Image: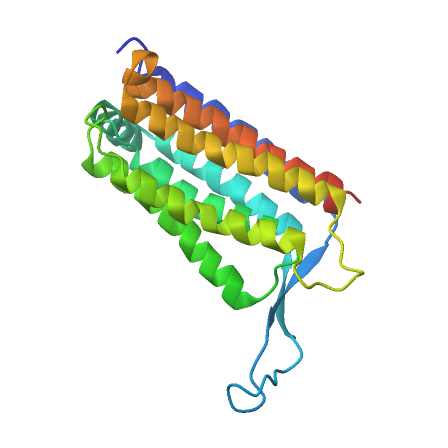
Length: 252
């Protein structure tokens, strides 16, 4: 391999530091804005169309949610740097798999999706729970692609299943932006459009990296090239979301 695998300890360490700095700054600078998680219940027999008014189950503090996905990334980057973990990490890289990445993404990207959905007006707990599950499935399909398929063999079935699962949260987000049959006064802040467009593009960049890795042509035949891109993309995407959310709703 042309890239030095031992340099990935430094890369993970500095990525962890950058995530940690954002984590601290978000908590230190943000206000205490929160968004509700609600439930709607039947009040009469099914089919009557009678439902209760939305019941506020609890509120999610936006800054804590943003800080959570930054903290998760920092933790996993530092965890990889530990001597015993780094040995397992490099062994996995030589085999073309990074299980730690998929575990972290399943948690952090799901929190990111919840933040985006809530800023977009999605508050029902069933919707949030269902879309969280679909997003986790998307990540797990990516893990299955690495676990069971060797790069260059042409089998991308887990990848395409993951693409399908990953499209659902964004379809839901787009529909909520359109607000079909919504009241005339319904509106979405401009910064939310910026978040949706930019993070949608970045999420697709992650899919593009895996697709390129499994075509295994040119520099992408080296798994370490894709690993480095994943680390950079993760920091840029999370930072972009964090500071867009901060500027739009958390700045004191």
